[in-house]
Length: 560
Image 1 (cartoon, rainbow, N blue to C red):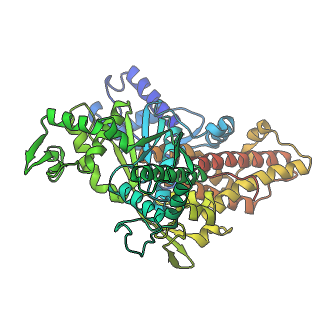
Image 2 (cartoon, rainbow, N blue to C red):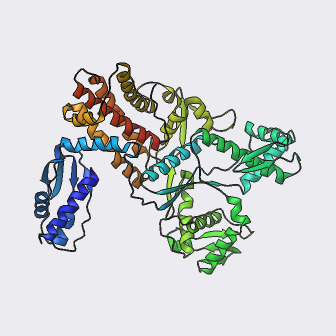
Image 3 (tube, rainbow, N blue to C red):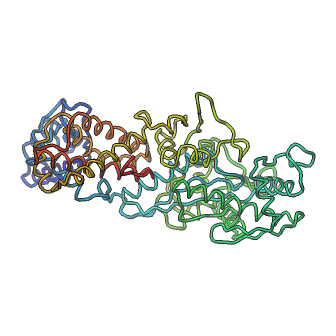
């Protein structure tokens, strides 16, 4: 409906310009948005106020011209409010037309082409291959994958990417931990690495290494040498073993990636050294105290940053700059990094480094979505440990406890900048207090109506049901139609704001409206026209619920 109103306004402006009622060359910039109160109509527009200065007329005068020029049977009436807001009251015909559109478009309803198939990459999860994925990674996976789905629904050509930090001190600690286990050393005994990993999974990696097992990770088979003294072989095998385990966790979570990028390739292919040479050549570096510095203050940072330490070796943000230069070279117009809030300090440095390359990378590229931590609760007590990981709750723990659907929904149902409390007892419950159960139950209820029709030997004509929508005139049915027509706007808003929780919140509200309607009225009634109208509206609800759940990676069951 927003798109329809925009088209009507643009058409009215063109007509007024043709009549010389408004000057040529004016550039309207306006918004159409839902009103906060139905008393003020369904939608409001500020076009008259945005044009007043250009047209040299009072806003209310422009509003009066526009109102007189807009004619459409779907609009019941138009009013002018305040200094010149235009309020649109939609008629039943507009709602009925949108219900027809929902059924016509089916799984495509709510999708738009605003992204115009432009290339967008979203990087998420990107866990170090040093242990099973924890709950924080799970939140990143749920948010990242939902964002990718939402952006695809907004017409972007999305590439999902996982960046493996398979180089550095943490990987060295992993290798030495596995080596110690291979040697029979326990975490509490002398000889255990000071920063070693203590989870039971290290014992599993060591056992498979000694058994000369082969693991398949990212299209490559890695065979264990079984030599306890060969730390390089242990390192390669341990990384591959954990990459496979993380991939299995993500597969169980319904999350997949198009590209897996190895940090080690930045060094083996000389990309880090080449990026540093480019920064030096661009004139944005200097030597001080034996170290190489980047003038990040030239690009908004609070102080310059060391790139190469005096004792040798690059600081951690340098490979990040090289990695993102590679993303730019791959032709992504937009890049979004979904990461934990602990990455906040790297945002400015990476952007500064990219600006300093002087290769045309725009300011604010890449974009960041940073999620806060997750606290897992059971029975009013925080759950902190996993038998397998030893020191944290794993993503697999949650999936095993409450299932994939509940885990995905709960991890995306709050704004990313808010800390999240994951209540295991609530997620497992089959009550209306559990939002994902409540939403899925609404979808299943519609499917049960279809089954009941078949069991009674009744049929429903969609064409006749649409023609009879005028019979639906109670408050519950009007609320349902209004709620359904909001869905495309929510998809658009979630894409613009990079905020998939808007979809989760909307689905809960839509389910509430449906359950209220379902509980108050019989659907399968003797009156054929009324029955078909209600069944058609219920089926439109099923379509929107399924589409919205799909954007969150949550299933839409036909029975529960």
